[in-house]
Image 1 (cartoon, helix red, strand yellow):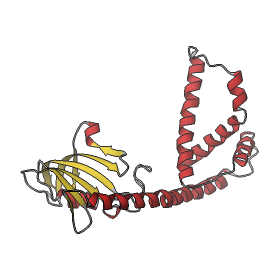
Image 2 (spheres, rainbow, N blue to C red):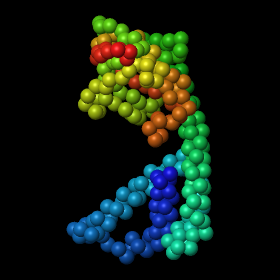
Image 3 (cartoon, rainbow, N blue to C red):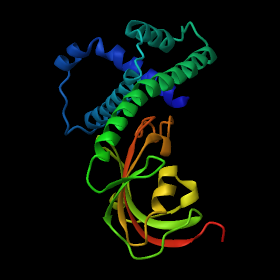
Image 4 (cartoon, rainbow, N blue to C red):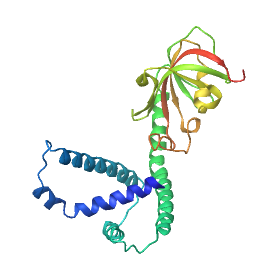
Length: 244
């Protein structure tokens, strides 16, 4: 809730300042050798980046707000003349936040579903791709010679996860160390897929949305709802049983 309030407060300030932005740009010259000016610019740049990221998030949801009213409400509240109580504003913003999340999930999630289905169909035609009964697709990059894990095992893995557009959302390689997971506490595509692998194996999985996070948006939008996920996984070792 505080994040949403900050978004709209900063957005209002930015819009208000933009009304005289051209004039300000002409009148103010920035001396980056001056500490106060350098710090002031850094604060403004930080606010601008924050606003741009959050307004983009709202725009993806198809949410339109009246900039004139935002500026007016900001000015009135700054003078202590707000026409709404703080509680009224918070209630409206909570409802707006839910609307943004719902509409964004529908729009972005619908696009992710379409792109995922197209990718799955194309990937299914590739040589060496195996499709399981559940719809999980996998390709053996390197076979292993060790044991296969059970669904109750902890496994040590190196992996990289990406969307079908190539955007990487998680990678143990980038962190520089492998990860340990219990196979019965991960997405279904992982639980199924890693039980196909032997220790030392390297597989590439394409996991349909229903075997991943389904209609949930994850990671603040890094993984949209209905996303098909691609994972390259190296099974390094089986490190124990969850029931031990």
